Image: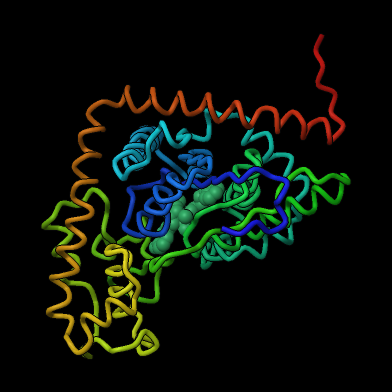
Length: 345
Ligand code: AMP
Ligand code: TRP
């Protein structure tokens, strides 16, 4: 992790995932696995279930409640430890929404209009009917990060532009008010699988919202389902090449090799060194074994934790108290910088 312009800020990691559906292998490799690794680097780590982001599109309340607990269970089952990391859900710490509003007044409409996620989510649809919250989504995301003065944000490739916008918002705030108050946050996009693709179409991101369940591996899939999905994954007829460059133009092959590398903790080069010349008929069962070996214990543990939702809520509540203790003073200082009168007595 680089120091960048943030030498004066204590290093702090923040990231979040939306409870808008089940977790996928993309979330695991692109985000959660890396959250766990960063938890053991001695830097303070803050991880959030971003329920306020989820409601930018319609969420059935009962489903949202279940998915929030399921995502928290996924965090714990994958190895996030409430004694090492602060784990909580966003709506319990009101400073996120407060700073989100302030940033709505700092960010410009034009910046939001350029966000590719906004364009993708409204493509082919009537953008007039999208919620105002969906448009302002990146501004709330900037608030999530900056209300902790977070310096590093581990995310998948698809979130890079939002973290860059967070930097722009911090810089504009600092400039407009003549302060050096918010850090210029670094995105941390590392590993072999920062963009896991659909198993049915190597040009599309693996996503919890894809209508085809065969396109993704869910963290709750059982061993047989995982094996079946990998066996049926789209590939080509060529054997495995010797070098990573030779995977160019073979998106499905590249995806499976990258998934293998990320699961095994190897580089793509190492995987190719072992499998060059073999066909996908022999590679896929190996990949399936590796995926089952890694994911089955997580899925079993999630199931166990979900038996006791009150315990999940208790841990999230304790995390929210700790998060609030960091965010509140930063929010109060922000109000002061803005010129808001805050004394009540
Ligand atoms: P979301 O599910 O959109 O809230 O994403 C949560 C985190 O998972 C973000 O850091 C994303 O970048 C990451 N993520 C989601 N899908 C993928 C994917 N297919 N490949 C890699 N990372 C992903
Ligand atoms: N926008 C992120 C996603 O969909 C989720 C998110 C919300 C987030 N706030 C964040 C990620 C802050 C990192 C930091 O993937």
